Length: 251
Length: 251
Image (cartoon, rainbow over all chains, first blue to last red; front, side, top):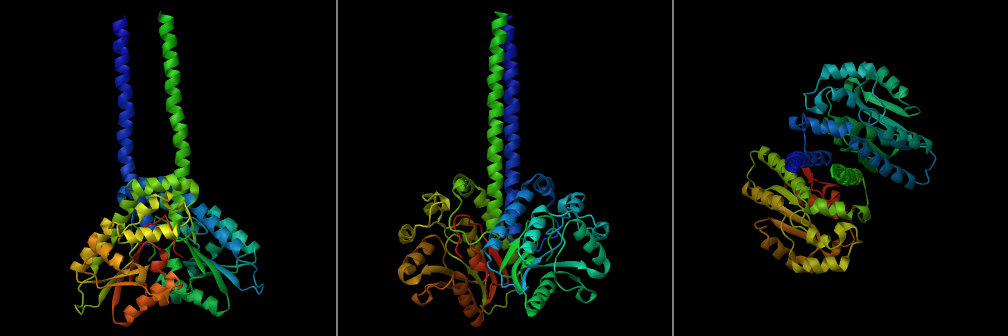
C-alpha cells in the first residue's frame, strides 16, 4: 500500500511539473512575441513606421489584448493627465476668446474600436464601404479621457475646434449628432472636409485649416490627435499630443 | 496512520495553494505597475511628456529591466530595420555627393547606459560633473544597430554628418577617438557645439546646423536621434527616426 502511495505521488508530481514547466515554455514563447509587438507598437507611436497599410497579421491577437484588455485605455488616460497638467499651467487667459485647442474626431473624441474589432483590429485591409456604413450609424462611443479633457477645456474658457477629415456633405449631420449624443457639446466649430478639399493630403488639409484659424487670430495652445498627420505640418499648436492608435495609419 | 497521511496532504495542499495564489497576487500587482510603466514610456517616446527632469522613482526597477533585459535593444533593432527599408527605397542617388544623413551621437551612435546604470537609469538628478568625467573616459560603446546603419549608409554613398550638443573645445578630441574606437569611421563631418553656440537650445542649435547643411546643397534624407529635440525645428530631413531613450530628456 505504501509502495502504491509513493507511485501515486510520483505520477502526481510528474504531472504537476509538466503543467508548471509547460506553462513556462508557453509563457516564454508568448513573451517573445509580446516583446516584438511592443517594439512594433512603440515604433508606430513614435512615427518610425510609415506609411503602413495593415497591421502585421501575426499581431492580431496582441492588438485585441491591447485594445480591449485595458492597456490602451491606460495609455490614453495617462496622456489625458499630461494634457491636464499642461492646461493647468496656462494662466491666465487673456479673455479675448481667442485661446483655442484643436481636437481630431475619429479615435480622438469618439472611438472606432467596435468597427475595427470586426476587422481583426487593422489586420484586414481597410473596408471603405463598411466604414462609411459604420459612420452612418452615428454610434461611435466617446473616448472617456478625451471627453473629460473636452469638458475641462470648455470650463477653462478655451475655444475647442474639432477638425476632421470626414466628408462634410455626406457625414455632416450624423457626425454632429454622434458628437452630441456622446456629450461633446459646446465646441466652437466642427470643421470637416468640403468637396474642394477632397484628395488633399491630411497634413496639408489640416495645416491649411490651422493656418486659417491663426489668421483669424486664434492662439492654438494644444493639438490632439491619434495620427501623426493630425500633428505635423504648419501651425501645429504650441503643444501636440499623440494618442495611441495601432489599428490604422492615415498618411 | 491513514488519518495522519490525510492531514499531511491537507497541509501540503494548503501550502501549495498559498505559493501559487501568493505568486499570482504578486504577479497581478507587478503587472499593474508594468502597465503604468508601459503607458509612461509610450507617452515619453511619442513626445507627450515634456519637459521632464528625472524618471519617476518608482520606475527605477522597470527602467533597469527595460534597458538591460533586452526590450530596449529589440526596440532599437526594429527601428534600425525600418530605417534600412527606407534606405533601400532611395534609388538612385544623383551621385553628386550631396545626399546626406544626420545622426545624433549620445545614445544614438554610442551609448551612455553604463553611466546611467550607476544613477538608477535616470531616477537620480542629472550629475553634470560625473557625466563630463564619463565622456572624458571615451569609453561609450557603440549601439550595434546604429553602427550597422552607419556602415550601410556609407556603403550606399551617403554622406553621414554626426551632429552633437557636446562641447567641441572640451570634448572634441575624446569624442573623435571614442567614435573611432567604436568603428564609426568614414563620416563626412562631426559637428559639435562651439563656444558661440553655448546656451542656445538644442532645437535651435541643431536646426541652424541642418539649415546650413541644406544651404551648402546637402539633401538630408534622414535624421536619427534619441531626443525629440534632435528631430524638431527646421530642415528636419525627409524622414526622422526617434530612437528610444526613457532615461533623460533634453528639451
